[in-house]
Amino acid sequence: MKIINFYFLVLGDITVKIKLLFISFFILAIPMMLFADYDKALKLFEQGKYDDALTEIASSLDVSRDFEPNSPNYNLRYLAGHIHAKKGNYESALTHLKRCAEIQKDNINPFIDIAFVYIDQKRYTDAIVWARKALQIKQAPVAYYILGLSYSGIGSYWQAKEYLEKAISLDPEMYYAYNELGNVLMFLGRITQAQTAYSAAYALAPSSAFICNNLAMSYVQAGDVKKAVEIIEKARKLAPDNSVIVENYNRIVSLKK
Image (cartoon, rainbow, N blue to C red; front, side, top):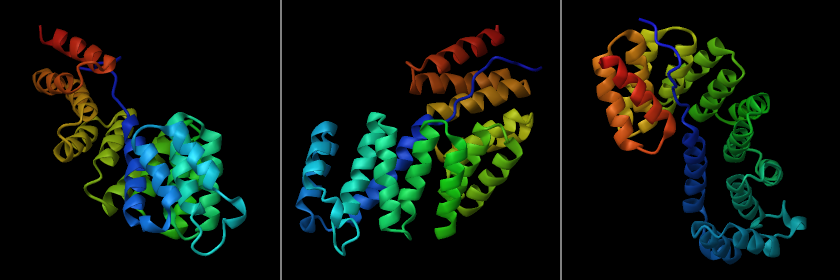
């Protein structure tokens, strides 16, 4: 039985989570007492006062000090880049993050974040360029994930599959890479393999409504409606306001009748 017009979900929230993961790591690594202005801007950011945080950064940032030893500029720009990205000011975000990449050429974080900003804009070829730059610094699983996500975005599914499998080989607990691999395999018509990938993602992140949705859809495509109903019901409980999940729930439940 082949079911069409069911919708699987790319983990759009993953981009945000990954970027926040990088900034959280970065925050923990900063000697706060050295950068009082940064500390104030960070607190405003954490309170959701993004415009106030940007104002604080603008008043503290002396561009002539970008490359001075012990300058706070990298930290200020990195935070500003994340705030602008969160506000949807992508060009401003890229300006700050690219400057960060110039200031600390051996630090992978701004390269990764630049790639994610491009993915947010569906500028996949640009994301590929920056992911490859990141890989020249470090063989980071997330860089391969970005390549997989980007190649999937431009419809090069076999290349996407290769890079996602590489990401997983480097980090077997990267559940969002398993999920995207499942999506790619669905596009390739490899339903059983997609189900395996989604199942791995589900085992690692059972509370993800998106992954539950995708796993349920793979069961539908494989003809196991009973199992699909079980999983999509869980997805609906986890995200009752998600219109795609609700629509898939209604369709899958109707197949059981």
